[in-house]
Each structure stands twice: as C-alpha cells, then as structure tokens.
View 1 (tube, one colour):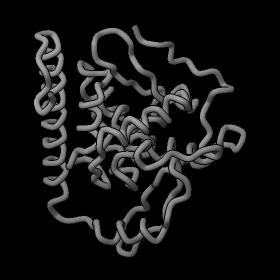
View 2 (spheres, rainbow, N blue to C red; view 1 turned 90 degrees about the vertical axis):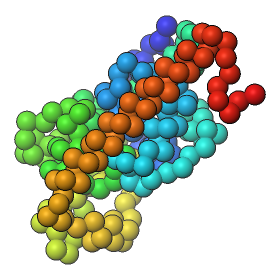
View 3 (cartoon, rainbow, N blue to C red; view 1 turned 90 degrees about the horizontal axis):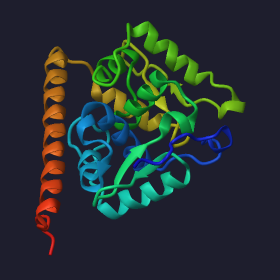
View 4 (cartoon, rainbow, N blue to C red; view 1 turned 180 degrees about the horizontal axis):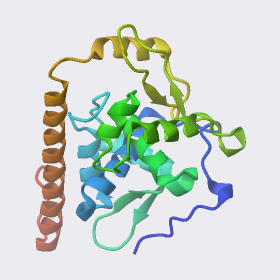
Length: 240
C-alpha cells in the first residue's frame, strides 16, 4: 500500500531554504520521467532507479552513481516530503511527490523535471523533449509556464528557473532550473557554445529518442526479472 503523498502547505519545500544536490536532482528527475514513460514498472525499485539515473542518453551530465549515493539522496528527499517509499511486496519501491511538495501544476513540474535531467534548453527543445511526458500545445505555452516559474513570488519560494543570456551564434535563449541554486553562467555559456545546431539535429533527436525508449524497455525487463527471481527464491546476478 502506498503512503499518503499529500503534503500540507507547511511542508512544501522551498529552494531558498535548502537547494537540491546534483544527485538529488538526478534522482527526482528520473523518478518523474519513469512515472510517465514506464508506468508499468513504477514506483521504481532501487536497481531500476540507479539504472535510470546512470543512463547514457537523455542525461546531461552523464553520471555513474553507486547505489549508496542514490540511497542517501532518497533518504534526504524523503525527509523533505519529495519522495515516498511504497510498502507491500518484498522489494522497496520509490515514488516522487514533486508536484505536491513544491506546490506546482503538472506542466511546470514536467519542465523542471526535464531541465533536471538534461540541463539548459530552449523552449523549443523542452517542448520536443517532454512530448513523452506531456504534450504542450505550442512553444508559446512552454514559454508561458517558464516565465511563470521565473516570476514566482518569494512568498511561494521564489523563482525556479532563469532565462540565460543568448550564447554567441545561438538563435534562441536557453532556460535553466534553479533547484540546485544559482546557475554558473560561465559554465552554461561554455556548454551552449559547444552544443551548436547542426543540419542533422532532427536525426540526432530521433536517435536519442530511440535509445531512451530502448533503455526504458531494458529497465522494465530488469525489474520484471528481479520480481521473477524473488518469486522463485533466486538471488540476483552478482549477489551471494
């Protein structure tokens, strides 16, 4: 049975009080992603969550987090009412409580989740990259939610995103989240200048989507194999 995930206003998290660490942001973003892309395997086991955090595609930066680091982040996020454990069954599972804990609408949470996973992006990139999570009507609607997050009142916790200065040669400005604290503009500009826009961008996007979908399928199969091993009383590969 899943715990009640309703967080009262007094428990809503404020970034001004305590920014996330990069690992916490990756864990939260991964939980938010998998809740939408692999709902049959959600809430996630630790193994599946670690695999999602360490994906090679659709992640910026790519991380190689050990189980211990993810567990530590989960414990800290639970204390902030941002993650809950699901009881029942033989394996502990984890689910996010981001929308309620932050007091945000679905669309805003989707944009923040994608920014946590893939770093600064333009409104157009965000609309494209979030289409498996939520289908925004157009780029203007993405911009509207981003501006709302940027203009968020201090009594509600303050701004959660910032519009970065236009990089040299770039056509559009990128947005970055503030969930881990202020953005290092020097690093952001360097990343933007090296990313560029090539003539084969659409092909890269399609390939990235295919790889992400395959990684989701692998994570689902790993989760199903783990459940089967537990039912049969078998140990996991690599375990005693």
